[in-house]
Image (cartoon, rainbow, N blue to C red; front, side, top):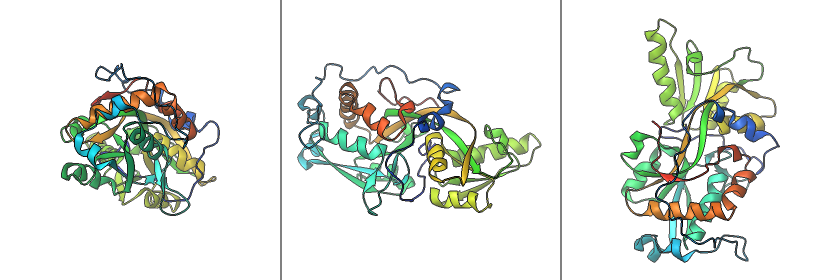
Length: 320
């Protein structure tokens, strides 16, 4: 996913409203009950962290000294935390109507996390497939961009899991073809964003289709989700493939151009990508504090993705 992303970016740079209509969450994560492993209980969080993340007069959560004490000295000295996001993936992260502000679920969560850690959030728009290399080089402090936590990625960075999502298909409203599961892609053109889990899964399915004596999958890869959407709407691709809640958001905001097809599948956790080191424990404690105060739930509710909420958070909880 981009978010199920194998490298992940996605979703259009359209100027969409900040709230979703009622019922979007059901569409977005319809597959949550259909598959995937539930998140394992958190075994490394600091459960003794006080419930003191109440909003300050400015409306942002207040600093929690016990959480801030877990932040590496280098970040405390700097006073800020640089968060890389590929802002082309609504409703998770995208550009506001002013043309430069990053908004969305991850953007709101990032600001709240920084606040309880006693830091200023510096959100940077970056191409998805450059984020993990940027973490390794020290260019960014964290990657908060709908990363699917995978075993392969855990070899390079740590993940603090905070959400779960599946993968989903969308087609032109006039399409008579139903897509449900990867095997349904055999013999079709599928539009995906470069570097995503969807690209990887569609490419693997091409091999499987041919091995089974069926027509292969024509994987059409695009630089961003806007281009993938255009490929579907123009008929150059038969189906679009993205994270389930993103596919639902694309459909909702298309005003009848697209429709969902099939049910979401391959539900897996999203993780905040962090360089190997102690910062992951500070983020884990900050997430726990936000959940206790109800701030985590309010953020997900605001963006209509509450069905992806985790009951508990953990470090490196990849299911595959």
